[in-house]
Length: 408
Length: 176
Image (cartoon, rainbow over all chains, first blue to last red; front, side):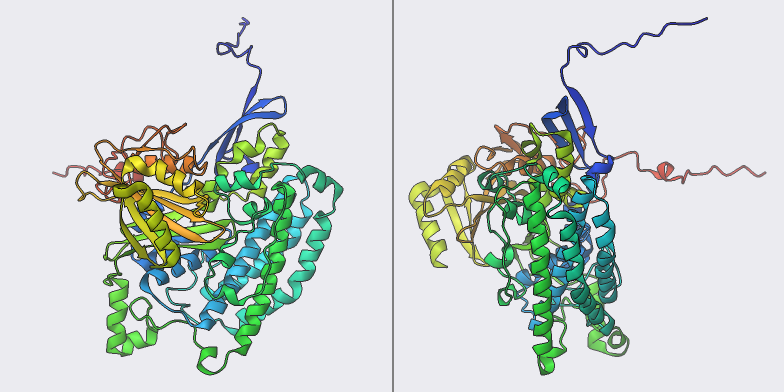
């Protein structure tokens, strides 16, 4: 016996003129776990409601129970596309609190790592913009150079994504020859690749038509929304933490800060491409500066901070003093000085800040991460409103939204 | 104290008198505390005054000081004059029993989510906020986890006993 089924619609749904679309949390276009509830009129976006927090891991709470050196592993899980940048930012914050002065060689080595991380982050972001607008080639083509960057991390610290690279005061060991060879290989080969990548995209009619005018923002609104990094510079504000408040000897390097005019997706794409060229030039300069160092300066790879720097393993087994330090550090018996410090670095997405309050104990009293991604994602609705659905997807990828950084 | 910080301090005291106090300079950043009712006036003053021009809200967060009776929660504003690269930080304290602070969303759009985050973790009610609801945690949560009284491992949950991890306590068969 056949039975007629009636679909019962919620009240008012026939009259509803707009469509609700869930973009995320596991949509392929979100490249991470976050959600957008879009209200669509045909293909035009009427409103957007962003939800974050799907991978919130309470890092700020966990950090209140950890020693300084144990927090480093939390930081590289923020923006996992450029973990070393977050690590370095954290070390620099600790060094500011502890008044540690690092040797020049440490600064240059750090600069190399930070700029490599910036390149790998921008590389992913820009090639993903290509993927989302239908051009897969660029993504596949540049991926092997991100691989090379990860191999360099691997040589230096033994891991690839969640790097935990370096320590308070410097590095745990010197860069080996393979690392330097690979950095040199990167410097030699990458320009051709980046040029090819730009040839594929920059003047590509289809690509340009998709990106120009998508998700624009004025400089004034961008500042009001707390934009930083490439997204702010694309809107025409030349704010770069490396220039206004140089850390790690950035003041010795010669580079320009590329800016855009309209703050749309195309400008963001171009700014990131230009920044990769600048980073490459900074790495070259750093390599030259390293070669110029003489005598003891040419071999040192960490500052003299025994309270925070684990001694050599063979010394721990054979020397009394070193063994004491080893246990004191591992057990976290080192009290840090009292104080409040805010330190920020130019991470790949913008100003990454650490606000650290110490009450003189062994772990921070309070630690707050200023995550650039979290702050500028709230402008998403303003960026995509009245635009097309397909533009929203590109806006999302060109903002470089990293779920780990948004949720902390 | 650096000259520009001295200038800022002088202007603030001229304008707000007793309302701003405990000026301090650490790591070249001026830091002060203020009455909580003055927070918007101070932000507005710092932003609109020609020679101060703090046009950028870098960060906003809260800190819990349980021993500070009557002023348990501090809301910290971290603002920045980008053109001159001058940073400034100030705190307003509020009572934990009635943690109400005026919202800064009308001055900086940045404050929107940062205040939601602060509400989520510390329960600070930002009066006048357009959409004050939890942002990181689930909306059903009924406490504010970053306050100091909550230990790291959540004691309020009952769904994390051994059974949930496949470690049911086995009853041993009786052997005569």
